[in-house]
Length: 482
Ligand SMILES: Nc1ncnc2c1ncn2[C@@H]1O[C@H](COP(=O)(O)OP(=O)(O)OP(=O)(O)O)[C@@H](O)[C@H]1O
Ligand SMILES: [Mg+2]
Image (cartoon, rainbow, N blue to C red; front, side, top):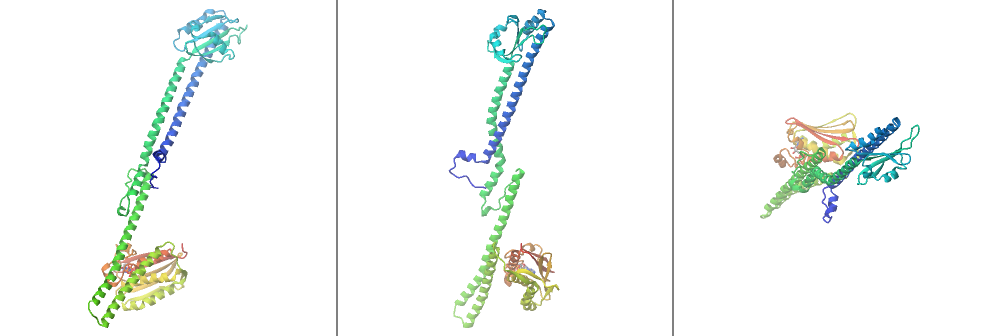
């Protein structure tokens, strides 16, 4: 996700592959298409409306002339007034009318019409399209709409005079030309502005992603404490940043745990090795009797046993953590398993003046477990309970079945664990009182091993404790392995 571009990609192709470029291109295309659609349809509507009103105008004028011809066939003055005066007085939308008799001889003409229009051309143009207007260019280059019609249509007696009519549409054409100019200007401006604005907006939008990438690039094992400041980010990216920060938190935690773990291992290995070395150096400083040598060997053997146990525990934890570690499950009689542990610790419990009891249901309890590992887990718990319970106390082992799970509990009436230490007792090398435990040989791996065994079985280990009252560790193992 945060990979860099290949160095040899040319700049243009690199730009084309950026998200900002793609977004900007998409915005621009959509924007331009919308502008094109809007302006073109407006132009089309405007043109149609102008055409329609010109057509209407011509039709109205034809109607007026016909009406006069019909109602007052011999009143030439009324016709002349309509044709010569009314048209001559107009300043806008100049129009011209010509009336021809049935021999094609002009009877009446708007003054100046012959200056503006090639009459022969007008006749030719309109011959095959009676009553319909056609476009035509005047003698001085002005645009006209022209039409011609036979006057007699519904007359009695019929007359076949011809009415020719022309209207100057240069105003309308001017308006349309103006509109077209604006159309191109808007299109040009949009095609420059849209990509620029789109690119700017897209860059702004994805800046947080770049910041997240930059933070990711900066992070190494030494600055895992760094976080992304997501204030002001849009919610999608704020959640991405939040997820990323949480990942960093987890990484930082695991890193810290691992480095604490390594320091603890080094420390716990160094002590027995130093003891062995010291004793041997002292022994070799001068000649010794056989008994003295035996004493030294016995003492160093003890340290060696401690060392190899510690290494064994570490190896066990490392193996248990591998994802594909398999359990050797078999049907185990849980009551018998607890009795075996009890028998094993009977002697050390009675030495410490502690009574060791098992609490069992009437029904025999069996479960699918890895027998050797469960023995180890329960033994660790009993060893802890005996170690932390004073003379006269009691350690109880209990097992019962609980909805779809087997529950094994080891409780004692010992000194208990302070509440602030409880969440950490399952951590490797954690000891509530390091100085005391070191002296008594505890390394702080016992509960970590219990937890990894229970996790391998798909269950959970829980601890509850009251300072001065006692501790209870409960192992809950589901019947069906998940
Ligand atoms: N039943 C208990 N009562 C009081 N404190 C306990 C009990 N069980 C564990 N603890 C505390 O939790 C710490 C961690 O226990 P854990 O079994 O992991 O290590 P350990 O007993 O010190 O060493 P190890 O078991 O590796 O020899 C112990 O040092 C002890 O302080
Ligand atoms: Mg222990």
